[in-house]
Length: 297
Image 1 (tube, one colour):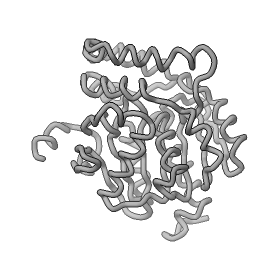
Image 2: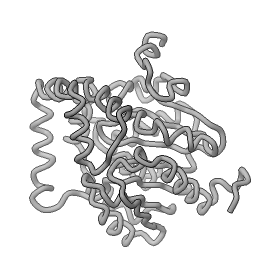
Image 3: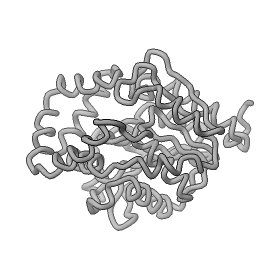
Image 4: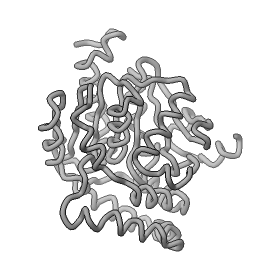
């Protein structure tokens, strides 16, 4: 336990970090604040560093629970069969059961939004609301849809590839360019933290494995069965997930609404954590999550 904590080094919010076992493997999870339980799920190739500025803001109103997803950050990598969407959702459910926590609100970024909605529509959690932050929720269509998954599987099968990615991540300029291609501009600290996780061969291999097994079609078919309100936050400058996709999802769900963030990209919650926290808090009031702690209407 002590050696794993030492590996955190200057990891953001390390005082909130816990190392626990659930679902048959070890997790790194950060828990902070008091109040209703809010689950935060990061996207592919990120880790809890993605919430470094947002989580403390939300902890003023919520008990924030933010894990490193399987294989990411400081969480162990389970069997490859559990790296797809159903396996990832089931693993997070096991973690929540181990922590004896039930979220009343869940917010996910990019692929993390898909995990959040998979858990909600399958009855793994019963939140009063879900927040999608630039959520990657729609299956790829056309030629891209036919090529992406097979290509990802081929890349995952190349044993030297994760090491090559990790080696390239030693150059901060390469990482900065990669992040800029999402439409977001991060400060030096943000870039250095992404470079740190990308330099970890195990983390990179897990991200590739996750992408190779990602299939959004079953979720897309089940999404109309979502029983709680959904807030779709979309950065207008997002180059990774077209913001118009949020409108497509909202059109299928009567309880969904879209909020655009002007001038922000795929990592909008990192670019402007205060504005994003305000959106989540306002949504929590709308669905009644914060009423019990005396929030202003």
